[in-house]
Length: 286
Ligand code: RRO
Image 1 (cartoon, rainbow, N blue to C red):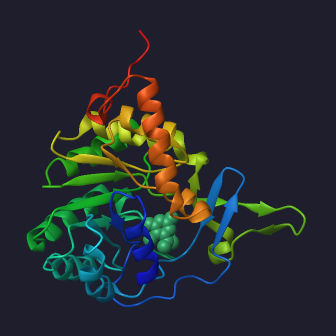
Image 2 (spheres, protein in one colour; image 1 turned 135 degrees about the vertical axis):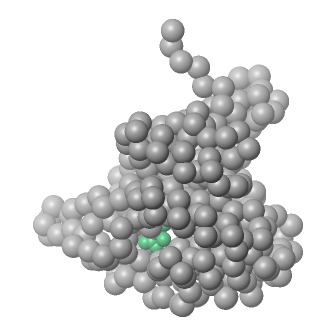
C-alpha cells in the first residue's frame, strides 16, 4: 500500500488508518488480474503486494498527523518473519496497534495459520514475548462450533487487545461464462471471497467469539459492510469497531462518511444515543 493511499484514508472520515498486510521484504504480489468485483462482493488473490514492513514504519510520523490511530497489519511469510516484524514495529512510537494476520488465503503452498490451533498458540506465545505494543489478530472464518471453541481457548490464554473477524472466505472460484474462464489468474482462479456473500459468516464469527472470548478482548467486525444498517448488525453481534474492505475498493474513501451518516440515521430512528447501548445486545427468539 502506497503512502498516498494511506494518507487519503487519513483525510477521510475513517476512525483509524489500517495498512494492508506487510512482509519482511517488499513483494509485487501475484500476477494480474488478481482482483475482480462480483455481483455481491469480490474475489481476490493479491498475494500480499506491499513495500516491506520498514516502509510502514517510515510512514508513521506522517500518518500520525491525521490524529487517528495508525494500525499496521503484519503477515510474515514465515514464523520467524512474523516475530521479527512484530518486534521491530512494536518499537515505533507512532504506530498505535499491530494486527497480526493469521489468515491470508492466497499464498501458494502455505496453509492459513488460523486453521492450525497448535501453531497459532505457539506463534502467539512467541510474538507476545517480543511485542511492546497492543496487538490483535485477524482470523479466518470458522464454520464449526468445536473450531470456535478450540481457537477461543488459545486466544483467551494471550494478552490480545483485539480479534478481527473475518478475513475473506478462502479459495472461492468465480467464472466468466462467455470466455469460460476463471475471473482471476493466480492459483487456477481460486481466491478469497469478500462482500455480501460473506456477511452472515462474518456476523456469526463475531457473535461466537463475543460469546467465547474474555471480555477485555475487543472484537472488530468485517465482511460485507456496505451501509449503516450492516454496521448496526455487527454492533449487535458484539463488535466495537468495523473494517471496510470490498466497499472501500469499489466506492473509495467517501464510503466512510456515507456509512457513518447512515449508522447515525439508524441509531436515531431506533432511539439510541450511544453505540455502547447496542454492542452485543443481539436478541434471540424465545
Ligand atoms: O494479499 C492478499 O492476497 C490477501 C491478504 Br494478505 C488477506 O489477508 N486477505 C485477502 O483476502 N487477501
